Amino acid sequence: MFEMNPTERKSFLFLVRVVMIVVAVFFASKGLVALKSLRYVGHPANAANTISINGNGEVFAVPDVARISFSVEVKGATVKEAQTQVTKKVNDVLAYLKTQGIDDKDIHTDNYSSYPEYEYDRTICTSYSCPPSKSPKIVGYRVNQSISIKVRDTDKAGTLLQGLGDRNVTNIAGPEFGIDDPDALQAEARKKAIDDARTKAEALAKDLGVHIVRITSFQESNGTPPMYYAEKVMNASDSGAAPAPELPKGESKITSNVTITYEIE
Image (cartoon, rainbow, N blue to C red; front, side, top):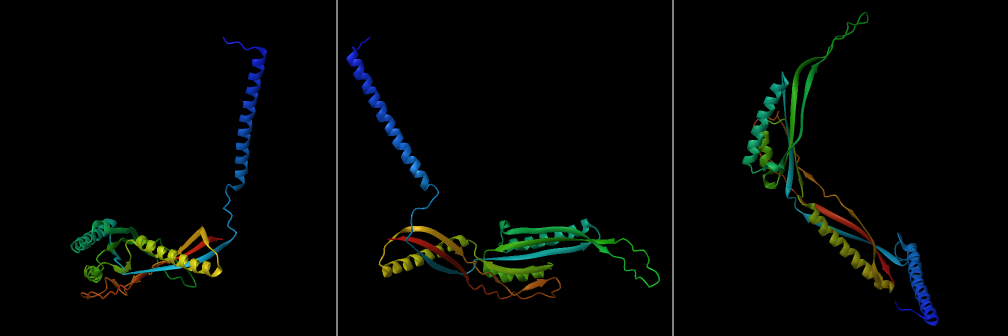
């Protein structure tokens, strides 16, 4: 084992103390920097000089889908009798829809309900007496099945309305025209709105004699595309075969309104 004389031991201990002091100073400085950085946690960058600009974008598109809803309602002496009749009518309608190219995935049952119908006591009271009222009596049952379909070939909407009416469903409502994939059109409208805001910001910055540094905030509000309805509601009381109605689809407008704040210098 190596042994140091007193002078060497003293020098060695001095060197160890120096290294320990340097290490301590290093970690202390790192801790101070970390403490200072805590002041900025959760706070935005300093952007006192800013401008806020509104941008607008619009996209027009012809509706590419139509939604039609209808229901079948039957009254029977028993629930089973009413259900059997409803099922028979609905199956006939579904078979027709398949011949018109409507996929199963585009046919949706919105509601199926069964409820009794009552006959209430109509006893008339006189000024002298009032016979005891009788409990309501069940006189039958109604079963209703409501269905909605998505029509991807919108040119067939009128023919479908006619075909459904010919099959004596209880009522038909629609079509409601719309866009099957509005997200793509919304993204296009948003891009136009952002480009509009950028153009306005660059023009304003030039007039002010400043430069745009970066975007500090962004907000968007979307317009709701208008839905177009055919002026047609049919029910089972329609007599004879109705002609297929003309159904103008018009255009849907998708809008985007953005507010962008820019830091300037």
